[in-house]
Every structure is written in structure tokens, then in C-alpha cells.
Image (cartoon, rainbow, N blue to C red; front, top):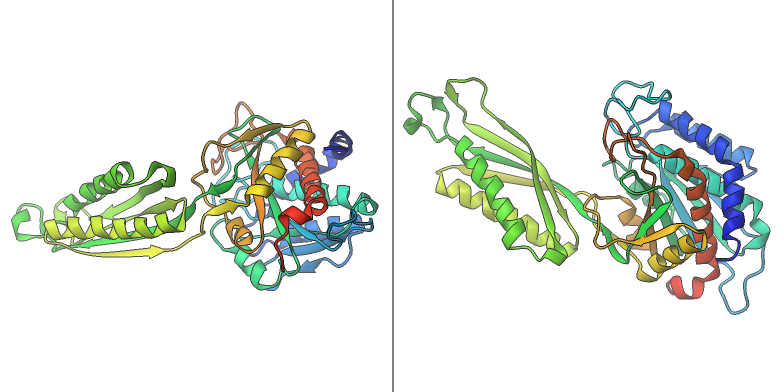
Length: 404
């Protein structure tokens, strides 16, 4: 990609500011759909860059802003394409133990998923694009989205019209398990769906000395866990894999009482809508069988979460080409990551892609760890990647944009 070195160099000259922005967000993390301090920082920075017309959300503290190109479209190509770049803004409800000197100043709240870096990178891209308006035709829409961590912030933004007029979309997620500056991508399913289940096994409580007079739900816990393991190992296509995780078990109140109820909670992660439907049926079948074999009754509740994040094949290859043009290491992932993302709702509406940007440091923890750290040297790299992908999508719109 021509101009890749120039973009990286320009972003690098802004590195100190991007680090400062990232740390300001990091020390002041906010949860859920309401991130007013982060929103104010974003609005202030956009104003400083001369980007006018930024719009705040009503159902969440989102920010949407458009950068309109002033260049001429290449002959034969669309002249009014619009590409959306998205960064999430919310943190996680956990206490930080990373040891950095800019650790969270809010108890029980931490940017452990890198959204602080996402904000800084997109603001860096905004600066690059604003300076290059004369070099492209079309519009780049900046989407700063709260509520990614289980609060459906993307859905709120979409309901408020954030994708109106948008032809394609792109997002970056940092990855502290991958080498810095490595861009990981794949065509098709990129990340899994994530649903939450709760199982209630009901029997009859009683005295621990006479278990035959009770219907003890506790012995049913192990067979359910084993049964779900069997489903994953023997009933699931490895190319359409499913992950059941039982993450919480609750039963009993003291040592000499057989409880009347046992409760299990966990997640179901799937790579396709068909696999998701099968997994729900399999969970209910396993639980019903265990309950019937032990004289118990069972109730299964499944709360559907985010669907699979599916990259458009052409968009994913375009991202790989852009990364290579920037001199970055481009890695085609052998399979999807089993985490989930609400960027899936964006990619259900328009073609596009998400990619991981490696940011590993030797003493840092993984995503969602209280020790999570990242290499801040990737902040300008992410800014340049955002900018370059947006420009490439606008320039190559004939292949990517769907017909209206």
C-alpha cells in the first residue's frame, strides 16, 4: 500500500499524545452504557482536531462523528461511500493489580480489555484522516461505543442510527497474547457467540444422616458437567465447535443438611447460528436426562448474548493487504477466537471486518486479567491501521460495498 510508511511516521509523531490519552482513560475507567468522563474526553479531542458536528447518544454515552473527504473519486468508483471505524469505551468491574503507575483510580473498575487503547487509537486515526481530507472521497464515520462488555452498546447505537448511510465497517481489538504490531485476521467467523445458562436441579431436602428420605440434587451436578464435556467431545463438529463452561455452582447451606436445590451457571460459546441452536438443545437434553435418572426436576434458562462475529471475506483480505503494506506482520488465524464481541451486530448490517493487533509485554496478563498490560508502542500503529483500512475501503468500494 503506497503511503503506508508515511502514515506510520505521521502516527508515530503523535505517539506521546496517544499514550497520554490512553492513560487518562485508563486511570478513570467507567462501566456499562454510561461513560460520561470518557465521552467528554472524546468530544474535547474531536473539537481540538477541528472535527465538527459530533453527536452524542441518548440511550448511552456514545459519540458519532463524520470526517468528510474533499478529494475526487477515482473514475468508475463510487464517490459517496461511507466507512465506519469503531472503538469501544467501557471497562470491566474488577480491581486492578497490574502495578502500573497510572492504575485505575476507581475501586472495582479496570480497563482490562484494552478499550482505553481502542479510544486512543481511533482518536489518533481521526487526526490522520482530518489532516488528509483532500486525499480521499467519501466519508469516514467514527463510532465511540460504550457498553461492549455485556451491555449491548452496539445495539443501542444502531437503534439510534449510527450506521445510517454506512457501507462498510472496521474495528481493532488489542491482543496482549500476540507479538506487538502483529495483525491477526481471518475470513468468515472471527469470534464466537456467547450465551449464559442457569440450571436449577430441584429435589427434596432433609437430614444428612438419612439421605434415602430425600432427593439430593448435589449428585446430579457432576453428571451434568460430564455430559456437557461428552457433547463437546463426541457430538460436535470440530469445525463448528462449541464450548460449554460451568463457572458457578451453588448448593447447600451447612454440613448436615441435604439441600432441596442445586444451581449451576455458565456460558455456551458457538461459531454458527446452527451450532448455537444445537447447543441449546443439547444442554436441555443432558439436564433433563440427569434429572430424570435421579428423581429430580430441572429448569433450564438460557439468556442469549452476542451472536458470532463474522468477517466479510473480501474485507478481511483487504485488512491483511493493508497491514502488509504498512510493514506489519500479518497473521491469518487458523480458527476463530471463542470470545464474543457486540461488533457482531455491526457486521450483521454491513460488510466489514475486525482484526486483532498484538500488544504483548513480558510481564502482562491476558485480556480480562487484573494484571493485563499492553505495549503502548502499538497505539500509533493502530491509528495508522484504522486510517489505512478506511482509505482502502473507500478507494475499493466497488468490490466491498453492497448494492443498495
